[in-house]
Length: 143
Image 1 (cartoon, rainbow, N blue to C red):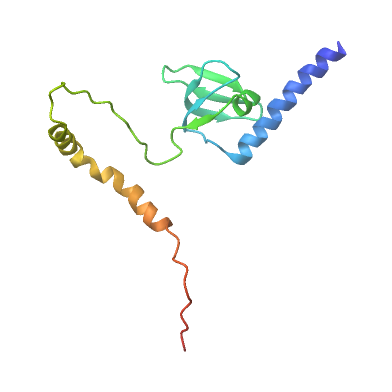
Image 2 (cartoon, rainbow, N blue to C red):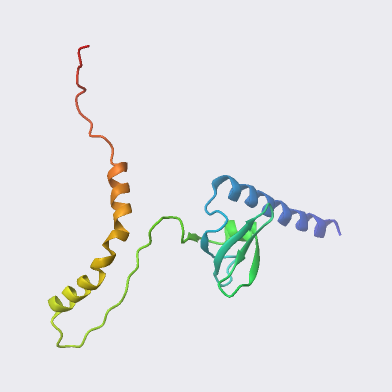
C-alpha cells in the first residue's frame, strides 16, 4: 500500500512541477492553436482552453475537450505553437503537365498571389525595426 501511494504521489508531483514550469515559461497561452505530443500517443491538435496546475485542456477542431496531464505536455515531446508568430508560411505543391513551360507557370502563380502581397508586409516591417544599430565610432557632439 505504501509503495502504491508513493508512486501515485510521485506522478502528482510531476504534474504539479510541469504545470508550474508551463506557467512560468509559457510556450503557449489560452487561445493558441497547438499540436502537443503527449506521452507517446497520437499528437493532440487544438485550441488551448485552460492551463491548470495539474493538466492542460485542449479543444479539438471536432469540439472534443481533451485534458492532458501537464507531465505529458512537458515531457511528451515538442510543443508546436501554431500561433507563436503573427504570420505562417504556407507551402503548396503545384503540379503541371509534362510539357508546361515552367517560366509561364511561375508567372501565372505570381500573378495569382500578387493581390495578397500586403499580408507579408508586417513581417518585413518588423524585421526592419529589429535590426540592430550598426556599431561604429560614436559621434562627438559639442554643446
